[in-house]
Amino acid sequence: MATMVASNLSLAPVANRFSSGMSTRFFDKPSLFMVNSPLYRNFAAKIRASPAIATVETVLGTDLNEQEANPNQKKQVLACPICYDTLIWNGDPVFSVDSTPRSTLKCSTCKKSYSGNETHLDLTIASGTKKYGEYKPASSELFRLPIVSFLYERGWRQAFSISGGFPGPQQEFEMMKDYLNPVIGGSIIDASCGSGMFSRLFQKSGLFSLVVALDYSESMLKQCYDFIKQEENISNENLILVRADIARLPFASSSIDAVHAGAALHCWPSPSSGVAEISRILRPGGMFVATTYILDVPYPLMPFVSPIRETIGQVSGSRIFLSESELKDLCKTCGLVDITCVRNRQFVMISARKPA
Ligand SMILES: C[S@@+](CC[C@H](N)C(=O)[O-])C[C@H]1O[C@@H](n2cnc3c(N)ncnc32)[C@H](O)[C@@H]1O
Picture 1 (cartoon, protein in one colour):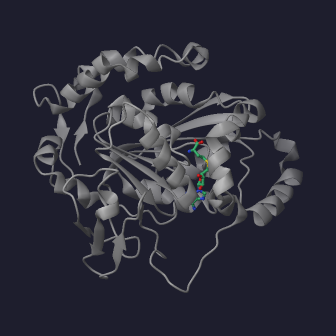
Picture 2 (cartoon, protein in one colour):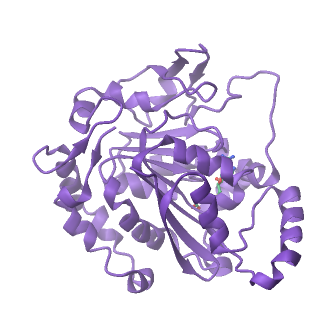
């Protein structure tokens, strides 16, 4: 997987224009028009293609220019969720939203086959089962309801701004670009993408060579697919939709440059399994950026609030973070470093890096 070092890229001055200090940037008007402009997209694309100005690290025996010459190399990032061995891809040579329905994948070790349906590749362990059904806790199952997927970008997500201080997708995207600077030109997984609001922003920005929109909910992925098809100026190339469980990610170890998880950590059945998996698939130096809620319970009240939190967690499957240090500890215990948090009321954006 190719990785560009931001300081060597001519894109850095452009990206730096977005990073004019966290406190002002946080409340600034979104400057998304810049990344949506054809000029900016062409600029980013040319930078990725120019060996003269990009420092390229080689992981998995390939670099960005090799990948462009041989798109099959990219497919090596996909791994069997059972044994993590390489999946052999039978289908169009390029990753694309349109090619995934016609594609099948086979594990070279355990021989299990995976296939794409109309909207996404199903790379869950239980994919293809006929009789066995599996249910996750309520916090995951809720988002599998088609009505919730339909409503998600039609008011549900917007409510997070009122209830928890989430700045909103466009401002969150502007904020996270600072953290993603070192991995521009590489691959990004929008983990628990929901209806894909950030997957679409990543793809339209032209800043990444591969965007994976990943979620456990089939109906969220269908909604994500529909939005991609409805939206103008969004390329289907180098964009795939994948159904997977965050606790069993279908990617090779150390193969991915960045993982984003918006408003999702608190919904995962086991945040530690999720962050451990993210840490496994990130290449050394890769970035993790996530947003969630923190309740900020005063220390003396912790012994009283913790049992209530555990009871709520056992019933709903959701995790309420009581303090920033708890969230940082989670990333640290999964081997991530350089952990930072930016806050606005209950909202937190946490960034962490896999050690090089
Ligand atoms: C609140 S939504 C967040 C959507 C979007 N990222 C955002 O920023 O608004 C939480 C998402 O987590 C997904 N999710 C829940 N459990 C999951 C799991 N075990 N694996 C992967 N995704 C999961 C849900 O399907 C849902 O789409």
